[in-house]
Length: 287
Image (cartoon, rainbow, N blue to C red; front, side):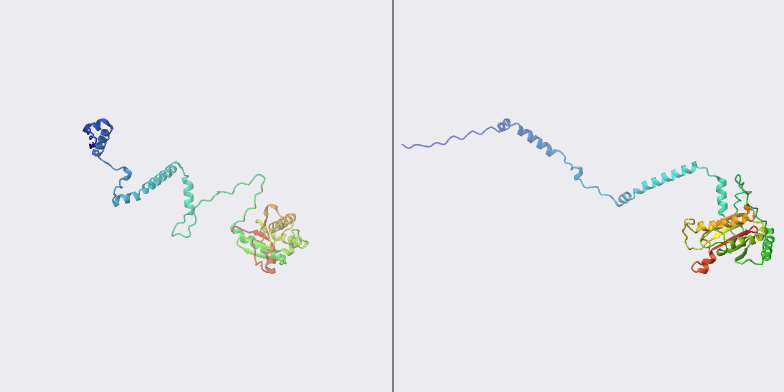
């Protein structure tokens, strides 16, 4: 007898709501998805394109620094105005400055209108001897004439040159007569010459300046480190000799110029010999 095979009966399908009841989370997920789909969507700020700007707005941004610059200038101006308000200048002094630099146009003969610094000569220091009074202008020709007469009586002095300029007479003595080379000690011939000049110097009444001059050849000795010391020592030596001969000390002054005032070129031996000299400058009147 044949056997009949039987297939298993199909499984009964589960009801529709059975799966939802079995997994309640699936329903919540679906509900969230539905809410998200219905909600409006906005792009993030960093993803949004920059707003388009017009040309006028861009030009305003490029010149925005000018406002800060103008503010700074305004503050600086206010600062100077405040400082000026607190200053109290001397009006009289400012007026004198203006008048001192101002020359009236159209009047070339008009000189500066600055008042004199001193109404009268300043007082001397205690114990200081005042300098000899300058000769009056009208006395200058008479003084120069007296010097010329005194020089004429001497019959001309060898080695002494006379130069007359308005207000002064210069007696220029060559170095070789008074001093040896590089020395400030008077020679016997120099002392004799100064003695012969005494009548001329006594005939004048003005101030006498003894000037020492050298050439540009440097000197470096323990006594004279430079030509400045040599020229000053020679001028002082002549002054001491004149005082010893009886000339009033208050009429004399010694000045050393080294090689700063040459009368000839120093490129030749003859020129250097002329520059090595001692000058007696006699004031004969007001210049």
